[in-house]
Image (tube, rainbow over all chains, first blue to last red; front, side):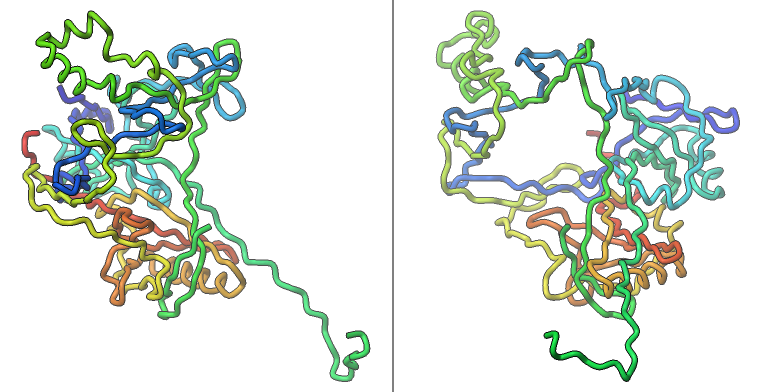
Length: 196
Length: 237
């Protein structure tokens, strides 16, 4: 069953489902199929470091300094300073209050990694309200419970309501390059050729 | 930093540098006591232990697959499953798991409803951002509030000057865009109509340049999109 998101604006609840938008749904999609010279399809495989075994699939895991396997659920998430990071619940676990607004500059300084269309009975009403507003609402978004929520921008466009899930970038202002100081020279200054 | 060959609003062109501005994730893991852990790549299964091989064996031995799984754990390759591997090389195998050495690459295109549209021989598409013809500053300016409701930008690159001349070039471009409160479309090809491709056979993107200044400083960013914000037809899959 599709997960339901509850958005709260001015104490009014707007319940909606989320429907992922991708290129395939708008334009179709293209795959590169690898075939033998007789046109039969081939399967992708991997050779290990030594070229000794045909690998079907690999995965990632964690080991400790004694090369013992560590189950992911037994590990503690920390930040780059080694401080524990709190776990955030899934955004679908409870209502989300629309209160924080983002400027256009904030919005464009994010890279969008997924887009959802919000559908629900009262969504046209919400589109009407948001379309007349400056800027757009943003809230922390976790599809599943996790440690690093992304930012979700609520964006009405093309008579639909889009939820754009994005991560911030770190573009900075760049300074003028250093200018070289040039010593003043008088016309009478002699050009010293003997020092060359 | 990589280079990009770009024109400005006066149709002058030069090579400048660009870099990704993606922010790294800052989540690491450690053991409950504080001991460090390291991530490793491990082999999950080999072609000896994949489902297709087990299904073929079940047919040849006239047994149910579940019987084979219970009797001998064929889904685990005891010699290799769980073994760490640092790097792998991609190969392609035929129906009998033999490595193929002569390959054909075919582009297969599907409609939004999943039906096959066409198949054609794959043609390698080179990157087009540093070729002799510079990327074109088109006359398509879009106000930022309109652009936000048109496209989803999945990648942002920042442009950097490489000397005093290119500082002036980029600073003026940023100030021009700031004054217009708009982004300008940057295109490839002589007329600037083609999308940008940053890697060989990479994704094609529509690109918009946005600029802002603060005193002597500037920020000029190239925003890439391959997705319009549009309602789609639902096909029930």
